[in-house]
Image 1 (cartoon, rainbow, N blue to C red):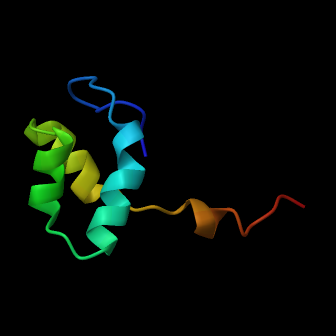
Image 2 (image 1 turned 180 degrees about the horizontal axis):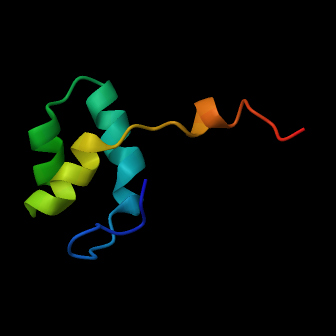
Length: 63
């Protein structure tokens, strides 16, 4: 997750874990983003378009 929004520069990374947990629990993405205070469309697109690949990438080691 990027630390800041690519367009406006607002810090958003600290909200990622909360967003991910609440959406996994079955809440609607729109309601979660509204509750977290993410109002700008540029910031919302970062959340909706992000794919968490850190665990997949961590399986590969440099030999």
